[in-house]
Length: 200
Length: 229
Image 1: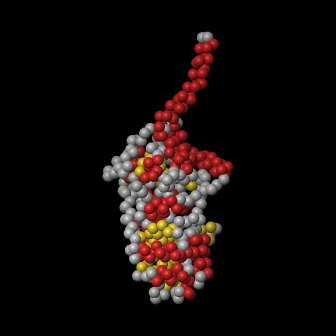
Image 2 (image 1 turned 180 degrees about the vertical axis):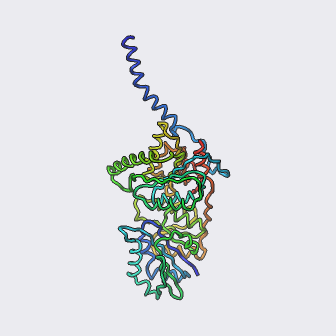
Image 3 (image 1 turned 180 degrees about the horizontal axis):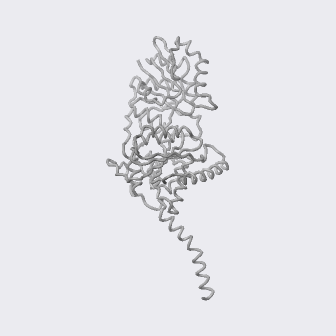
């Protein structure tokens, strides 16, 4: 039974990705492909004391009646982490977690916005990644970054579209594409440079 | 002394400060000195010993820039140097991260925190951008004067406010007030083109590090060691 994590980063709400993923149809497709747990990290964009990301997430949940149409039941939520589950499927949702690595570790496939931090976190955890570009951002280089990482075969780069996303998830879950392991973080480089310069 | 000799002396006296100013600039401008290290993929197995009283200033740029910097610093042991953390006025999240880093660091050396007026914001109109940059310069100068120690090294990775900060320290170095070396790491988000901060900072940084090979080939002074975050 597989786990998929969808992560939108900590700062800006990735509304369009949430719209793609939060439909009963998308979730049914995931279940059909052997996914038993979907974890959604929807963001923590706060304006005037209101969590906009949470608002977007919950309005989509209500709009598509996801909980009732999939026969899910709300379990006890704690620390802003909500869980909805049935006998065959569990939906976990959270705004942002400083220990996001815990959720990355649980996942078989991660669908992430193409922010450099998120991409590197997922690849360093040795997880299969699908990068989706957030084109709502201004002055943004996610497209270049996602393209480059995909070109190097470290991850897949998907359009923000339900059918394409499902296809990519399927390919990765069933091992139909092979990705190259991302090199580990190199130690001492920056420290050496800093200390070389400080000693001058 | 005849008129002509006097004139010559006057002209020479007038030009002398300019010549001195330019000679001084040539002497300290990193862009005019070829970097000692250009080797790609050079390994750093041994970290050099660090002198006592070394201060490292770290600028946290906001959002993704701060995210990259904190990931870079996860591989850097700063316990033997004193740290000065610098953030912009509209960015409390970065200050939280700096304080969090300090809480997890056991060090006998002190840490300072400094907040500067922010420079240019994304998509800001030019005039407002200039006004904010000027305010940023002023607040940077005031901030530097309040510090117990000027930094030995400034580590930054953009954006906006990092430019006035680096130029202020460069100006102070020009007048012999400090000896700060500047290390810039371009964001991993920049694949084919340098950011505006990167372009502006290239001439005055002592070490200019990029994270994509494409950029390494484009700029003579760029160094490349793979992804550092």
